[in-house]
Length: 202
Image (cartoon, rainbow, N blue to C red; front, side, top):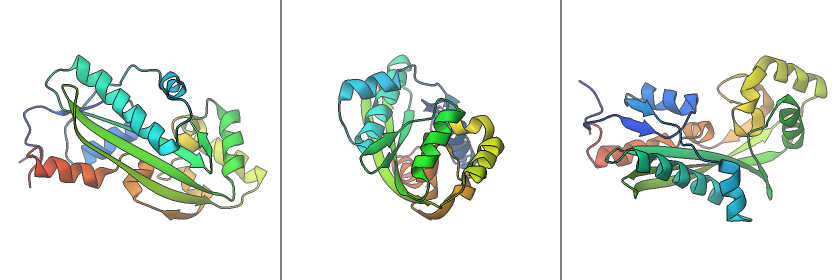
């Protein structure tokens, strides 16, 4: 018997392999339809907004774009931003950018803001945002180069240039917050909503 009892799979408006894996591992059937939006242009158009607001804005934009193309379907979108004080970070473009970001984060505590939006036919059914605080340890330039070698191209696939479920865990001294929020998808509030509204078994 499946935990998912809705008629059609959940649509994930993201190309994130981690988010897809999280949902699949929890027993939810997922159809992946990445949103064709220009995230940096949307952020630029919003002006000076805080990192948590940016995460919400982008999650809404992704969900709306895919929901418009898939009428009647339940569409989930999520986004994550990173802030160090008033400075906001995006996914590094290459190894050099990842090196620069990680040097800035070294020895500092930064915040990860994760937001999700669940939408159908343009209507927001559920939204949620959460925050996690991560403290990087002090590390040498030599270690940083070793980390970049070990992580490879993965440094360009997430804000901050790390994945705590992989080699990125070696960067940290302390982590405070929900594990799934750190991965970019606050899962427990989403499952609670789906359960209370008859999409998954209760």
